[in-house]
Image (tube, rainbow, N blue to C red; front, top):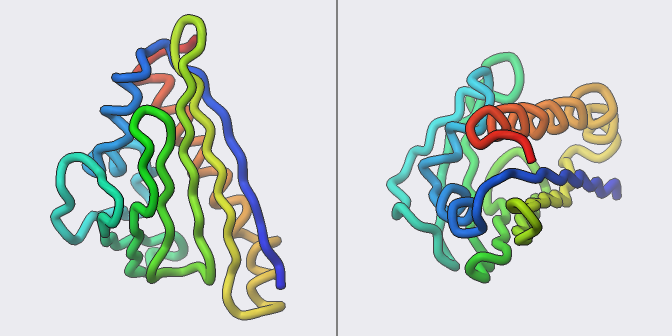
Length: 153
């Protein structure tokens, strides 16, 4: 069983309240997702997340092929962290923790994604060939967009 992790950190010159307001709103997901992912929210989540909230999407991570994805917000600790977990989608396991820390001059945000791919050895090969690079590029895109939106710290 191959289990993978991706960790990122970003510092922005905004308040903890502003960071929380932006990231706790599902409608902002499309703003920080690359256009080539074809990201579309297909249900109507409330404007602010809550524990138990279900968000459904269509994404096109590879060759324009549309995939349905459903995540649940499983844990929310206001202004500290939230966790989303895949309930249906391309991964065997997807557990994504978003942490927010007030620091001098702004906010430090960390993301940690723990995931597993289906299809055994074929999933491992796919991870090596393109999945890992694709996930890294999505988080690099997010960082670029967020720095353009909010500035550098």
